[in-house]
Image 1 (cartoon, rainbow, N blue to C red):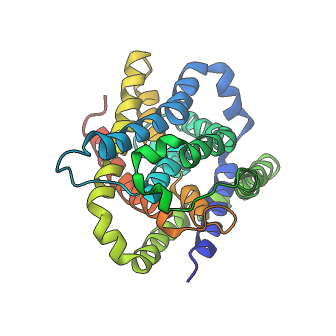
Image 2: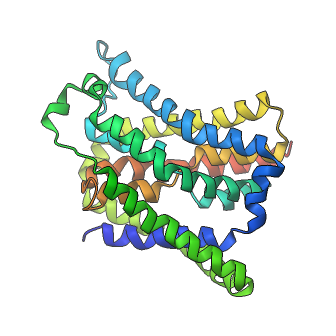
Amino acid sequence: MNTIFIVLPILTLLMFDLGLVLKPADFKLIAERPKPVLIGLVGQIVLLPLIAWGIIWISNIGFQNSNFPFQLSPLFVIGIMLVACSPGGSSSNVFSMLAKGDVALSVTLTACSSIITLFTLPLIMSWVVESSQLSVVSSQLSDVSIHLPVGKLLVQNIVLMVVPISIGFVLNLFKPVAAEKIHNVLKRIAMPALVLLVTIFFFQHKQTIIDEFGSLGLTMSVLILASTGCGALLSWLFRLTTKERRTLVIEIGMQNAAQAITIACSPLIFNNEIIAIPGIIYALMMNLILLVYVGITKIHPS
């Protein structure tokens, strides 16, 4: 089974669902409270890719002369960076609500990052794929033929993200009651759909995932913990409220794994399911770690 036919509907529904909860007031938040919005976007779009690249460097360069077992192949390097460059996941809005965070801020950050990464993702990934520095990270790159068609990536992201978000937004604007009913259905479908995707991916690439879970599971867990820690640190440095801090921890730590998987599997872009494996493992570890974080917020409300 070609997983692209499962990933595409899931991503489209997630983006449509995001549009269903967007309101004009969410964009006013940028003017009313620019500080937490700006900090969250810097954390997601600038710092997270830097953190991911730092982890990759430590894994493959910092330990190249030691017995450190977690060396990452070029395809996995691309997959990890693809996750780090993706926008915030729409599920972050639900996690922010569960953690008693600032849901309006969460929606605003998810929407803004989805738009901004239309342009930043192709730029960063072009550098990751084509930069000579990647050949330093792995001498195997010369044996791997990977090309990133930036134009097709931009068009695909517009079709799969901007269009469904816009349709959902317009529906919510003119038919808010209908939009809420549809949202209540879709939010119950999203998680089972992602579980189905992970399950299919596991059985298709079972041996590779089992063999590489040690290195990728550790790498993705460190990435999530470092990014959530970054959100907490930024919130503390800029004296944000408790609700804003919880939202930034979740937003910076929860990326749109479905988009990363879609780009990896798309016949128009990478057309390589191995590149999608980091995104699959990330989705699993992300939900586990952030569920623990939500539990901690229940125990320690402040």
